[in-house]
Image (cartoon, rainbow, N blue to C red):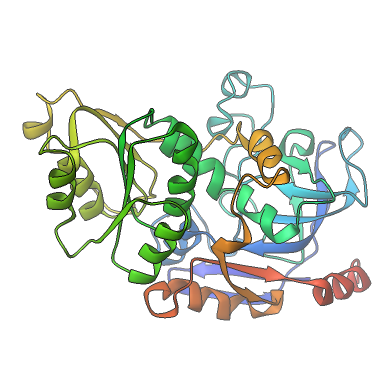
Length: 358
């Protein structure tokens, strides 16, 4: 089969690799029908996630069709269309029993495209299938469902819930990429007083306004002053960092009010300065975290009911074999206007069914 393989910082290739096979009785093999690229994948390619070894198939977000299951799998069978979660769960370790699947110590957590081969391929082996894939209702489009593999659960759990968004709050989202835009959307479930989006790209700020942001500001145009003006100098109740660079994080800590929350969502590849000399007296709550995906079933119900924006976040579509081109477009989002890219389609589906096992 074909897959997108990481060969070291700055080096990726769409190439032939062996077909995946069942390794454990809880595994399933899924034909990938729709897949996307995450900002975290870009961090990997830059070398920011050193535990990803050369030779790894990247990707952790996909929708596909089950083609094979291990003998212990109970909840899906060949032919089922499923959402593949970015986080796998063994279901047995301490953290899985607490619903903290991102911290799984039994072989799960963020495994796909990280410690095992991922989803940017024609086929993928998914461990712990009963807890790590979600059957999809027939009325949920595959490309819409892609957004539930990672970005909506991450924005909701690591941003909105960790940030403790409440009615009437002033919420600032720094970074209006896919995660930031999903944070803008899901923050509205808690009726904040206003949402302010900050980004360097005007196209992304326009997308934030279309999804419900009340105010937007370019990161180069003194967003801290705007937040101060809108809050009578107090600062925002909740600030979410959805970029993953030191400058964005430090900006967040300067915009939050005394007693407020800073929810870090972004993946950081460089050290960040925490200015405790300024923050110690402000009673700030700072949270970080990897998504657990416990909210995915609820978000899937919302999507099926038409309560979540979906394909409006997907700005570019490609065939699966155009993976390298898709990476290039997504990595130059400021130039291309890319929010979320998606790959796959009916043509690819027919092809992969015919070549399975060859």
